[in-house]
Amino acid sequence: MTTSITVRPIGKTTLIACTTAASTPVLITPSSPDQMNYAHFVNTGTQPVAIKIAQSSTNALYPVNGTPADYVLNHDSDVILTVPSAPFYVSAITGTSTSTLFVTPVDAQ
Image 1 (tube, rainbow, N blue to C red):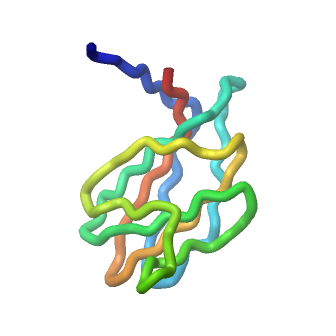
Image 2: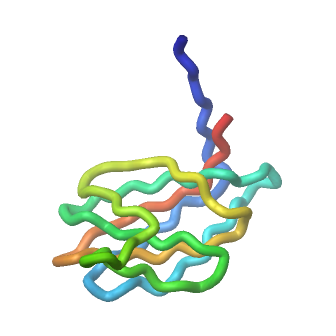
């Protein structure tokens, strides 16, 4: 049995420049009245990016020996994650060098 999921952008894409210091948390808000339940994350850089997703302004931490991150996105990859009710904040950080993260609010059904 194959299940297909329809993903539709419901807001503008936000760019987050990632360095070894956590980015300032960025507010992600849909521009549609539709319920936002997911967000599409794309890491176009050459380094993994640790992401913090929260309803408050909280900085990301890069995972080291027992310090977890909400999610680590490998370099040159993308993922759709479940997110809190809109609006929500995203902060990102890399372990070395720099990376670029794009975040788009989406509706998935």
